[in-house]
Length: 333
Image (cartoon, rainbow, N blue to C red):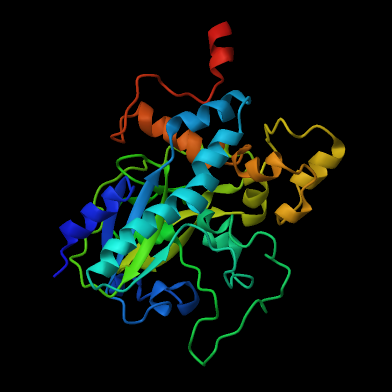
């Protein structure tokens, strides 16, 4: 019989940095279109695996001199390469032990989300189906039977991480763990193995310092308005997010953008279109793919990381301090 301890060891051995387990009943309050139970109704458990984003990848973005690392070794490399490899290794062990599994990395490129309210979905929604958002009038796909979700289901991995006891949703809407703060991405495995779930996180990481609000280049995070979601019998609350502003700033536009690839007026027009779609970009090649690391994580990730490290609210520590100011400019002062 599989135990939670054995399953967690397999997850860590496969490449995860952190792992937690949720029972599927914790998702019961979510709508069917955003509920992982819609994918595998017989499932008993979800294993949630967290993969750290290396802190050093933010250095070149802060200095404005090296953007490709955060995308290729951070976001794209994690969701499209490392997570699938780790999931293959992990699920192979699970299925060899007789547990049916559905591995789900952090990419939902064909999800039925076109009729969703982006402002209420938060940061977990920004990079989903970017090329078709707002273009299909809610007719991306249809349910195969009454009461069923339409393909493909989208569920927020930050809520999965919460249900697995890995941390909390911060004020910005970013998920925070006691190990890395906002600096990780998640993948999930839905399984029919009945495993002992982890308790919900009972600590407090976010102190509502509002650094995320102050540093957001798109001014997309509300200082006063919030969104509430019920899950696992709890009510979660985070800042209301202006999706149109956030999706643009995330890819390099926004009112306070520091994107060095904004060279021509045509560039400014392309990077600031709303809602953002990669197919409308003017800078192609490597810049098209490095867009997500150009500027938009300064408010909801980099500023949060700096604050949590400075106040000692997370466990992962480093030899060299990290500030929001350029190291080169600080040395001149």
